[in-house]
Length: 192
Image (tube, rainbow, N blue to C red):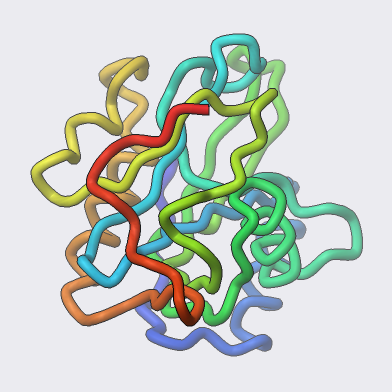
């Protein structure tokens, strides 16, 4: 797995993101997006994949998924956040990490390029609407909880861990606000 260096862009613009996507496609890579959603306490939202899913069963992961044909990176991010949490994308704060990986068996899987974004969302952060057939639980984690991200993953499978670690270092400033009249998320996991 190769990690690509991407310049830190605190507010990536449409042209920059389109260029990243075009480069991935020119390299023969399918695009994947990941949302690093922070709360006002600087914690990040993760969810555990169901043990029955094909990719990364029973592992902690970010909301996100594949970019559909004709879809831009921001549009895919917006759709995936809505589908997997019920929240709405407000703003892309940063491109945290871009990396390549292959789905499936070595030499047989599809070549992917993942774009992980630090984002602001709107919605009731205390009550995500989780896709119950794909995820079993969700939780908010801070720096002290970082080892949780590795549960169920092999020693070499550090991609999501690295994205979360980098994002946690960026969320020292106030981030997401919940909808008016909604409370901040509690400090416990949400079972599905």
